[in-house]
Image 1 (cartoon, rainbow, N blue to C red):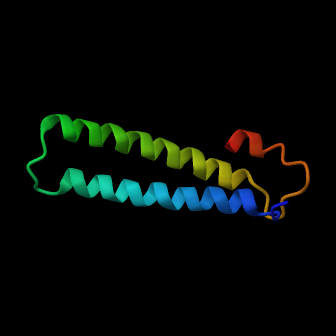
Image 2: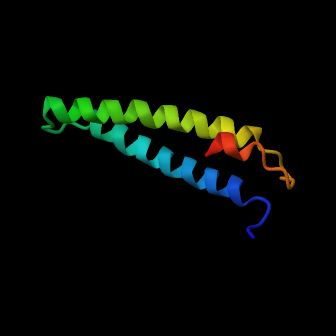
Length: 79
């Protein structure tokens, strides 16, 4: 069995990965490169989705109690 804070730590790690991806996509959109119009569109779309995912992860993490009990009913909303 995993430790009490395992799910919260998992979500925090995922949020860090999404933040890193957002930074990468923003650099790609700002950098003066010869990206095609379609590639910029895809990057913008992925950036929008990543920001939405990050917002959902932050909500999920904020709802998790410091000391997670045995019930874990909140975890279903975060998966």
